[in-house]
Image 1 (cartoon, one colour):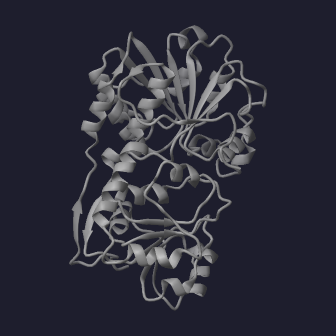
Image 2 (cartoon, rainbow, N blue to C red):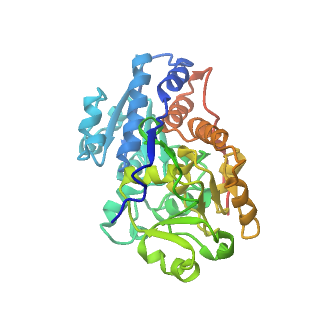
Image 3 (spheres, one colour):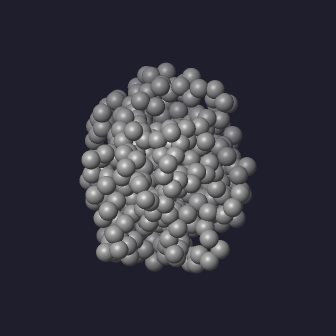
Length: 401
């Protein structure tokens, strides 16, 4: 299959320099005494978790009073197990965590469960637990998927629905209606008085290790990204006439495209390697995603273009209002406004460099996993911070419906 980018294309890496920003962040936090934190990871996001560990290593090098230990359900993956140990972070086998007594658990100041799991269930219902308990929802249910073993996730019950004796603070990057429904299906009492909710901006990124590029010349006018949870009826084919269009998505989602847009200058690819994907995102003049409004998922297809700095055009969906309220540099379009927005971002007068700077700045401030874990830990431990990322929104009920 021929490469999507011409051989004459110039590709330059444009990495995020997160280390100085991280150092400024942790320098403003004071840990008053020896404080012990346990991370219980139930996700498989190796690159994202590696970036989280990078931040923790830096923080502990600056703050010797902070001691963080890692436990992972997927320690067979290098970045989640042995790779963490090699960075100097102590690791606790998940089997040993299951055998810890309440007295041993109470030697900890804070336990952060990244994703729902059996361990989180046990901790939430553990009588006598004094360690503060946080559930950090990053929209990945990899442990639940492993338990389902190819079956329906909705069949997995982790709890009985009874109120938890221990307070739980939940930080979520998803729309409230989505994450609460998911956890309720697993048997958790999400509206219990013991559950305190915080809403984070959107899916986080490991910016310090994320491949981002500058590409010249640009190869495509419009990149249609993904087919699942999309509603292509929101697009008018006439608005795309005369444009070079690339669709990246699974083949089962292309039939509607072929029928409606087959007469256009349309290239369809079902899959590209990860590194080529990031290059193609950077090689596109804009990215267009017509979301089905009623889909309340959080999407990497939104976060990745923001990080690349490529102009992003999306239709609104449940959960996108949080990004809109934060002033994300996203063009929210409808069927009626699409053509005018395309004319704007594809115009020679559009300041792509200024847009790129705003987009990358937004990601560094709102979507960085390092800043996100810093805020969760510092807020949960009530640390004094002179520099901190914008606080999450607090709400007792779903912000979207």
